[in-house]
Amino acid sequence: MDPHTRLLLSLVLGILVIATIIGAVLSSRAESDGARATMANLNARIRSWWVMAAVFSATVLLGPIFTTVLFALLSFLAMREFITLNRTERADHEILFWAFFVILPLHYLLVGIHWYGLFAIFIPVYAFVFIPFRRVLTGETGNFLMSTARIQWALLICVYAVSHMPMLLALPIPGYEGKNANLLFFFVLTVQLSDVLQYVWGKTCGKHPVAPRVSPHKTWEGTVGGIGTTVLLSTSLWWATPFNPWQAAAMALLICLAGFFGGLVLSAIKRDLGAKDWGSTIAGHGGFLDRIDSLCFAAPLFFHITGFCFANGVDPEPAAWLLELIGR
Image 1 (cartoon, helix red, strand yellow):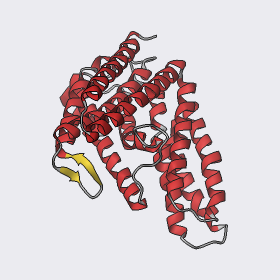
Image 2 (cartoon, one colour; image 1 turned 30 degrees about the horizontal axis):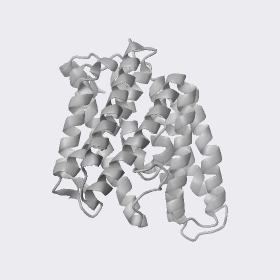
Image 3 (cartoon, helix red, strand yellow; image 1 turned 180 degrees about the horizontal axis):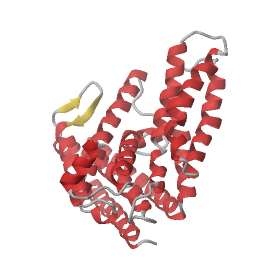
Image 4 (cartoon, helix red, strand yellow; image 1 turned 90 degrees about the vertical axis):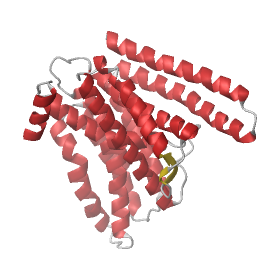
């Protein structure tokens, strides 16, 4: 095991142990019914984090094939939640079969064999065109636009966006060979820390909602406090990435902002569908899509910017790095 990977795993273990202790202490001190309910939810979240962290860490350590399979399964379950909450027509059933059992497996096959060229366009080009073609062959025109758009969105968010995480393992970064698992750890840890810390800051001092009609529990205090704290913590992990400290800070800020807006977008879709959560599979969190909503929007940005700026050996000096980015 790479020494940096071992340190990252130790860090995650330490965070979970500390969170478990804090949750137990606060739960024992809760007096009102509201406080006990809040602590019960917090402890349920922490227990779920233990399971999720163990599964993710073990899978990544087993290698790229197991990681790809894990994310393929996650995409399948997330897309199932997305489609379940949406009203589908009878004419959609065959198209959904293609989406779940043909397009999704083929896309992750491209991830597994690291065929980046086709991976980048398979869903946003070929699947995007195929779905309305196949739908029109059913002869049904009722809710045609809405039906095709729902399935396209499901594939785009739950499959295409999510698949950029295992694809991080295939990035050819000079001088970073064999260490890409650390990059995946850095990304996932940053997004999840941001979600958790925004929740903590919002619960402790949140007063002003960012978008009260979309997500009333997201506050400016929680957002700024959570993102600021996460950027500081993630910057301290620069040694496990191909970034220097200032680049790690910029990447962490980008990840947190993209994750924040991704969460808002998925919340808006839930409100439109009249649902509070995407599911109830994960105790304290909701469904799988509730847990990965921030990852969905942040993953493609992080993958492409990292590949664009670092997989080609860009000069790490700030001025040269920025000029190279603008020049390209």
